[in-house]
Length: 170
Image (cartoon, rainbow, N blue to C red; front, side, top):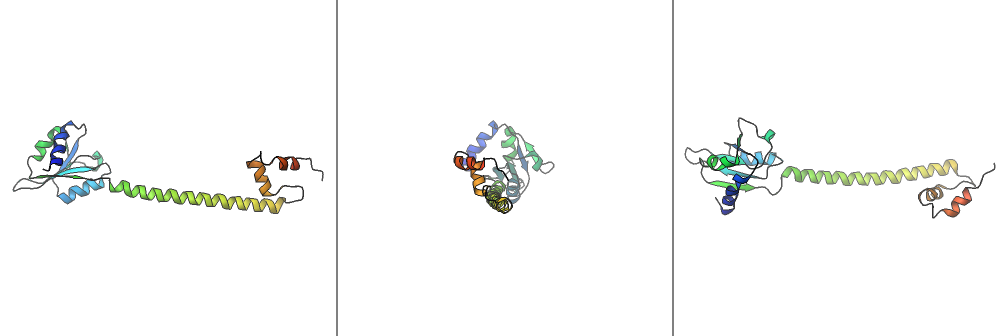
């Protein structure tokens, strides 16, 4: 193994979590790690003569790696589990592919939702103002813009409020 792989192998017995081992090809091992959202690294021991190939996932969900194909390996058993294979290679995934795709899609969805919320707010404000102006516009009543100013910023609409607050005799 490379120096990084040897360092990783020596640090494994200190890990509190169990690992998952199986007799599968390198491609199947990579696919198993890719399909598990928690998996970020795995070891693969190449087959030599009568010794089988071995895959060891260092992170994983128990529900994704069920028996009989996958076997739960305790950290103290790793060296004996990989001893029956040829050279051991270590692989590390920088970030799980599933999470990256999920982040891209949720960001797009959030942006679309924000744009639609702004458009809906603007169109409903315009529609309410138009309906108010058409139904309630008289000489003694405020326009929709004046009414909005009185409701949203009462300190700026002091004169308007007093002007429209007088009793109306019809």
